[in-house]
Image (cartoon, rainbow, N blue to C red; front, side):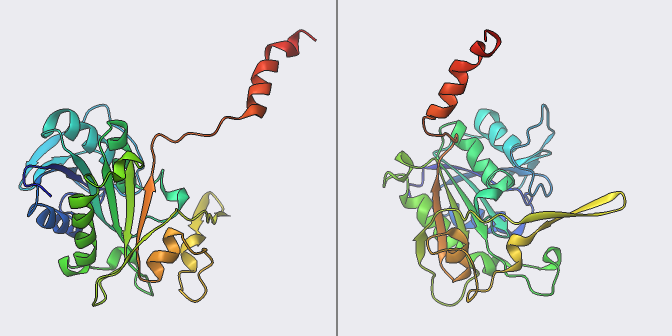
Length: 265
C-alpha cells in the first residue's frame, strides 16, 4: 500500500474503543489515516442519519456525536481528505448473516461509503460467548491481531487487484487469534433468521436465536457461509454490493400494467 494512500477509518463502537485503535495503528504504518468515528458507542444503529451533529477534535482525528453513517458523510464531504478507501471497525463482535446487513453500524458505514462510490471494508471480530455477558468481555489489542493483519492485507491489495470493480464493499469477519494466521474463505452471508418475541404484560422481549447454536460440530449453516467459516476458524470475506437491486420481475410488470384497468372494468 502506498504511503500516500488516504484511508477514512470509522466504527460503531466509539472512537475510544480498542478495536479502532488497533486498526489505526496497523493501517497508519502504510497509509494516511483520518479517523472520523462516533464519540460513543452506536452499535446496531444501522444507517441512521442526523441532520446536525457536534464534532470534537480527538487525538486520532474527529469524534462525531452521531452515527457511523453521519461519520462517513461528514468525513467524506467535509472533515477529511477524500479517501481511496473507507475502513469500518474493528467491531467487537461478529456481523454475520443477511439479516445484520441493515442493522450493523459497522456495515452501514461501508454501505454509506458505497453510495459515494468509495470502496470500503467492514471488519468485525467474532468473540465466542460462554457464561460471561458479552458487555463484560474485555479485549486487548492482541486480540485484534488477526483482524488488523487481514484488514491491512486487503487494504494494501484489494484496490489494485480490481476487487472493487465487482464489489462495493467487503464484509470481513475474523476469529480470535489462535497461533498460526487463519486462512481466508470467500463467503456468502448466511440466510438464517431466528428472531422471536415474548410478551410479559406491558413489555415485549425480542430474542435473536441465531446465536444459540454456534458450536462447530452442530452449526446448521451450510458450507460457504460466513457463519460457518468464522466459527470453524477461518476468516470470512463476503464481497457485497450497494445499492441493493432485484432482477427484472415480469409478474410485477403485469400488476403495474393492470393497475389503472381495475376501475374501468
